[in-house]
Amino acid sequence: MKTNEGDLFALLLKNLPPKIHCSDNKSGAYSKPLEMTHNALKSSLFIEFNSKERTTIVVFDKDTHEGQTALEYFGDLVIFEEWLLEMIEIRPSYICATTKGFQFGFFIKGFLNVQAGHNPKNSPQYFLSDIKSRYIRYLDLDKIASSKNHGIFRNPLRHKHIAYTSVIYDLKDLKGALPLEAFASEIFSYSSKSYLSVSKHQKISSNRNCTIFKLCCREFAYSKATKQHIFSFAKRLNDEKCYEPLPINEIRSITNSIYKLSQNATLRSGSKKAQINRAKLVKDRKKQIIKYFLKCKEENRNPIKAELARNLSISVTSLNSTYGDFIKLRWQK
Image 1: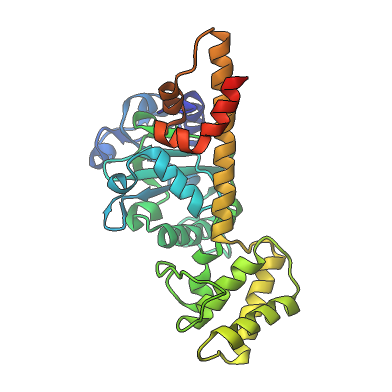
Image 2: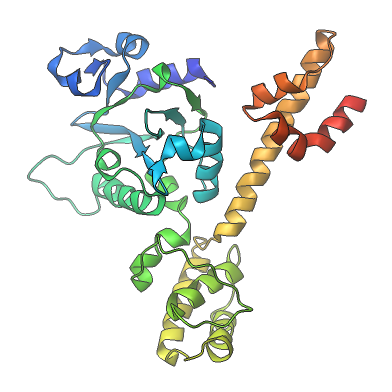
């Protein structure tokens, strides 16, 4: 699976230094002399990303998930991509398979790194470090590999990969793609790993702050509610659903946080985000299905479901269950 391979080669060539360290094993790259980047991209399994002076590609590594290797848990690139798009509101520039899991990266508008001995306020380098720490916690990524900007990573062109190269991101895009759960630990000091399954129709017996906060996120996501509306909703939850209500000053604190996030258009709901990403994925695949049928018509041959499923990188079962009615409609035409 090598989507947009030519575009990915060109984008890597543009964003990497003219010469880089490379190797067919990760540990041996820096022991070898520098290679011309276009040769390294064609021949080596591992390549040097970014440089000590400049960062243009943000790389993350996912090795494990729920007690298994990420590769064992998700099975293939497409399933991992679907999970990732349900977790964050941004599509990586590429995803490639590793021996344990997956590496994914974003091409960004590059910036010069801060040199040792300098500590400028609000530098892009420190902003990216902060963003990376959130991604690592929220997605349970490999901390050592994902924290690095400059280092040896897998060459996606020499591994099974998916690429989407039409968009160059900035750091605000990466930060804005995280749902509110990724920031909740800063607001109420609880771990994002301890996911709360909550409902406004159930009694709240524990994690009162976090539960009310999350229910407010769901209620007011993608809206600009008034502070009074938010306060009334949070207070009603506190009064009617909590076995032991919180002090009113804590409800005011929750209200202020939700109001600020909603006014900045940064308040998101995880379930809503998943629906949006899923709808976009289905829409994109429907376009691919139409193109496939048109191609078959041009070539004067019958469509084959197994071939179509392979083109979409899904199983025939998934094809039938999700797109069966749509395919029947196209077939009739």
